[in-house]
Image (cartoon, rainbow, N blue to C red; front, side, top):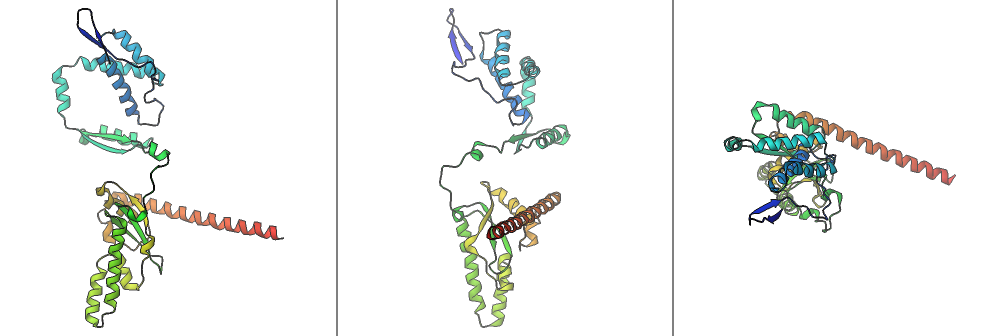
Length: 314
């Protein structure tokens, strides 16, 4: 904004753009929600009209048209936004106050082309969710495009993670969750295993069985260790998922328990609503199919390499 002193010593303002400015704003053809692009254009219209007290209405319109057309906004959309702003300026303060009194709730979801628009339209058409506004965010961020410059954090030093441990004697896997460092959680599992080794050496049968029964109730992993005598590879735990918000971890753990082959108790997934059952079943089926395709691809690659080696030997 530039401030101009008039001859009568009054002040006027005008919207100002530096000569070196590129004039770029969010392009109309960018991969963002449509309402987000419309809001960007409307805020620009509002900014030019509010800050410019020197220019005429026609000059303001020409300024808005020039910059928005430069960013591929349709002329019809620009005219509608200008008319909407002019209509809002004519509303009384009482009408604007009544609009602001309604308590609005904002919920954020990832932006997926086609699906996100349908969800937003559903909430708009529903009379039960008039006060809920859906806000989308883009997963295709700069952080996902460029490599991180910081050193990678060691697996066992990470916290707020969903982890998986494999059995050393069979194919059993245990899925767990921790808000502490993964190394600290592994110390807890190792302490349980050490206690199990001590309990198995108790000569009194009744005391040994009583303590073994208590250990089996701790976790599904200990239940497997007590029942089979197997041990889990605590030195090679893998991270399945993570979240900075701890309240998301329980639902992430349930999702991974339902979509992977594991020994976890079925009570671990009781908190998941039944409407997600079909989705989890589909994800599990697709994951199994992808693993099978990868195994078939690896087998074909090995056979091809062997055939090529045999031809070379001949």
